[in-house]
Image 1 (cartoon, protein in one colour):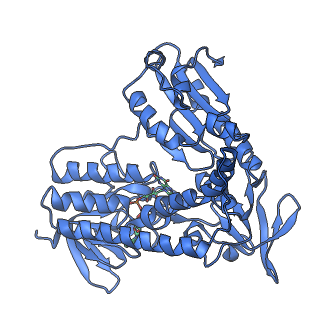
Image 2 (cartoon, rainbow, N blue to C red; image 1 turned 45 degrees about the horizontal axis):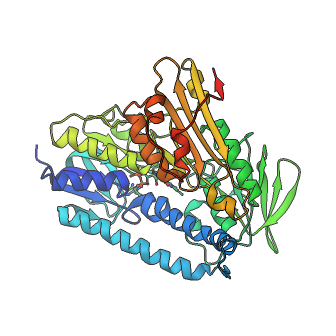
Length: 452
Ligand SMILES: Cc1cc2nc3c(=O)[nH]c(=O)nc-3n(C[C@H](O)[C@H](O)[C@H](O)COP(=O)(O)OP(=O)(O)OC[C@H]3O[C@@H](n4cnc5c(N)ncnc54)[C@H](O)[C@@H]3O)c2cc1C
């Protein structure tokens, strides 16, 4: 049977773009790709990249404050969102062009259109035109989810933050995950009055308990009005903003209410189940270790599969798919020991198990320290850094590493190499410290603070 393409990719985000480009450029496949919004996907257009640029923007008031303690006559002055927003828009347009150019140079045919599955070998574009392909890759990512409650249509999501015409003066952020916490810190740093509600007992569920407490403390100290055990009951539009009634009985008026309460896979109305593709209960595409769905010609990578929802993982899954299907080299994407970061202020970098997970695996030793870092300590800031290694008692292997500090994301990337290689506590110990740094604490942790 002949097809229009060897591969048709639905979704031009991290996973889809990587798979399309590699299949075309390295395996010589005839590839088509449909993207319904902007090339680059969540990461480039409304996720990692614009968020990190906002993290940088929000860090300057502190730099000026510290600079004064170091003898500089510096003042932060006013933050001009319109200047930043215009530069951000330009940068995202530039990046979008880079992604598009890379695909075109690789020979991928791009359709600026929504696409759905018509049958196991056919996609249908928005104009009704159908294209056939030997293999179809679903790489449609996910979208923010706002629960139903009175006034829920007045809430905004992370997608809207990058499009603010002007910054709100008072914002309520609802959620306790990494996206909610990052935006709380970013907007607080930019001078917005931030209140954060989280219905659970502590923010950053799923991360290491000690790190969660440390970050929550730092966020409160920086001025985020964090209220755990609290949710929104209803929102009403009033003359001077949005009136929010909370489950703790209190009420207040905000200029914006941002819900960062989780994301859902983009599979609605995609024709997947009709074509026989099995979905999980939450709508994610069910795939095996090679990213193959229940329909042999249909594969899926990235957030739409709800495995590890991070850009580098989507990219690895896309690359592994191409190895498996187009290069006769069956490759599983590796989901073990994936390092990650939360870009709060201070940052949190983590790899491997939390202390709580490790305890349920067997005997462990916990090495942990908290201290005032030199740079901000000199400036009289109250910041404290946390570093922690979780070690398996028998094998001495480091099972997890957790760092809460400025630049923790950069540090964890390197610690992750050692831990991925199977480093033991003694390997860390025999590595000479780089002095004076924060990271040197990781190789000078003497006695366990806890065993279990
Ligand atoms: C605010 C925020 C911050 C984040 N920060 C980080 C971070 O710091 N580090 C990190 O690693 N990850 C981060 N992420 C997660 C990261 O963005 C995702 O894991 C990653 O983008 C997933 O890539 P993907 O290819 O699966 O999907 P996406 O990048 O979401 O791409 C899917 C694409 O498919 C398109 N699409 C959907 N349906 C269709 C259709 N039917 N037809 C055509 N096109 C369609 C969409 O428009 C989209 O462009 C963040 C996410 C958010 C929301």
